[in-house]
Image (cartoon, rainbow, N blue to C red; front, side, top):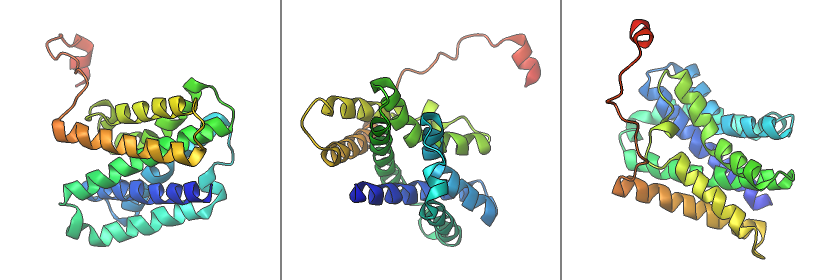
Amino acid sequence: MELIYCFDLFGTFIFAITGAVKGVRCRLDILGVVVFAATVGTGGGMLRDMLIGATPVAAFTNSWYIIICVATGILVFFTAHKFVGRWRVIVYADSLGLGVFTAIGMAKGALYGIGPVGQLLCGVFSAVGGGVIRDVMSGSIPIVLTSDFYATASIIGGAAYLLLGLTALGTLSKFLIVVCLVFVIRLLAIKYNFHLPVASTALPVDDHLNMER
């Protein structure tokens, strides 16, 4: 379990990077960048813990989560000009973080005796919750609703974790398999431009929606 905890901190660091990069791209000040780093790094875990009653949430009982997010946010703020343009680095990091948090969410849901559907939601919320909050804060449509197999990769990984639960594999083995699976699915989706069907734009927009715009 110590190794999984280390993966959790590592995933927090990776997601904090993606949150901080979003803050830099939105031209936020240093506090805003740190807030975005903490939001993405810990937001999904906080949401998961609140829903399953694991309170106080892990980010409040273990200071390392917030310390890592703050340090990462400050680091990205001052060094972003050196790597923000290297999109592949961010994509690889984000894909790995997606797999890590999916597996951690599933494991924690199982630890609390939640049913299969609840475990799956724990995995997905852990993986995408922070990013959704970040996108809402930045005034954009959450990327999980528009991106190439982002939340879908997490759902597939969560389903695989449930199936692996029918085997004799230990928690660590299931964890590593799911991390690798989500990582590979996400990268393949990006490489081959996989997308879920998109809603038609030919439908008329209601008049009251036009007035609001």
